[in-house]
Length: 89
Image (cartoon, rainbow, N blue to C red; front, top):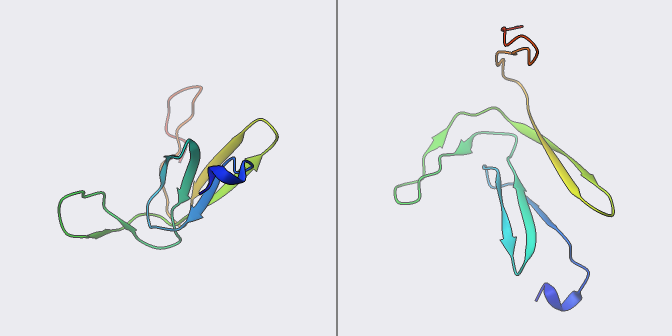
């Protein structure tokens, strides 16, 4: 169904409480995490909710590429310097 249009280059949708990416009918897709708890990846058990920071995504699109930056917020994670390897915060 998607390929018959001939102009679908990427599919974005969300949220399903997890970051997910893949392809369908040769068209790449991505799901952005929501602004609340996410579901654990458990392919055989019951659904369980784990605590994870909420996130938003910045999506940059031009004629050649799609770049997705996922940004967690409301959590205090350590920051490390790429130059020294030392903890900054």
